[in-house]
Amino acid sequence: MSQYAPHVYSDPMTIALLETLAGELPEQARVMLVLDNGARVAGTVTTRPVLRHFADCDECPGVNATVRLDDLVRVSQQHMLWLDSVRQVLRLPVSQE
Image (cartoon, rainbow, N blue to C red):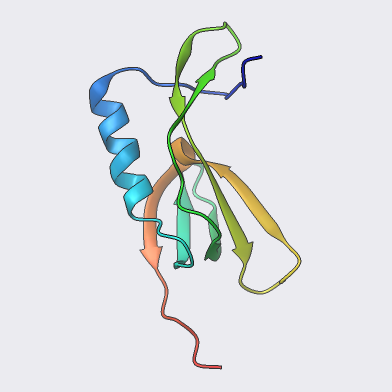
């Protein structure tokens, strides 16, 4: 059974860009993600994103990844985002609680 993604990528340049972006999101990093629609999402990365094989709605194969963040303000809120929707990763300081 295939898993589906809204967008998948097979060209080496885009895959390299996605791998670089995933490398900026290590586990437990506190980040602000700027999305391609201009929205910003802040949270703690639960697991480093890993590129996986998916198919798009036309059954074309390619890769993408998901990013899961635990919200910094609402502890019970989680955000699941497609890695290709992230335009910028801003590192946030670790809180000194």
